[in-house]
Length: 293
Image (tube, rainbow, N blue to C red; front, side, top):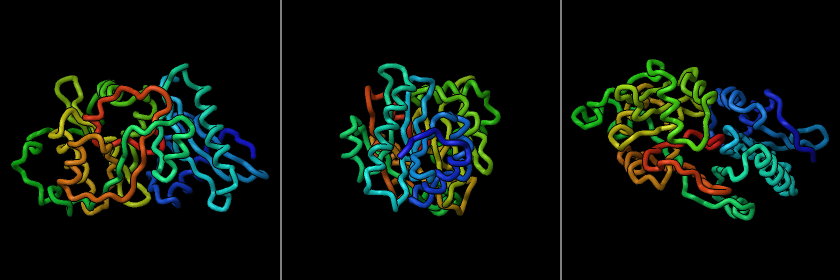
């Protein structure tokens, strides 16, 4: 087996494989992911055939994320995945500054394997789902008298990018301006925020996926702002199934999902290699993605 960098079209293939695994990637995730870090994707090749792949994305050299770890089903159980995963970890470490952390969202069944490779579980990220407009507290069922109804939610296109980026940087372990610029301008998606003067107090993005829509990130200063953002993005896709990847450690985020009757359909363990990044998990109501953090 040889492990080499991917070219652009091969990332599309990786997204297709992820869809077959039931991970429900966004429709144009490959384009945004590639623009974020063209050197951040590797392929495992046997006899000129790609048998596996994954991401090794570096955010400014200060934070790394490993995702998209897939080996073709007929090639599993041959030791190829182990070699690919450890090689990816080494390649990403070489791309980062000494002492920088790497994170990943690993499926629960693989948790022991990742732990043997030096990763430590921080919490669970749970994928929850419901139908916009049919969940309690959404669409016509939303109580116009609740506190969130008085919060003004605006399109992020009307907010200076520097304001949005500053808020994102406070909620993500590394700088990702190129990623963010594209992520909030998704074809078919919506990006909204709450601002107070020249300061952002929360933002959310919803994007079309293979099935329905995925919300991520959902960052907010408090539960009331998170509720207002959630209500706005779900109202824009009423009738569609929506998914939110909630960090279980945020009790307010879990309460938001429970209040709207969302049900768990999938989950991953957020795991860290190195010192856990200092981010305000009590303000993270939905992670951006399982693939790039």
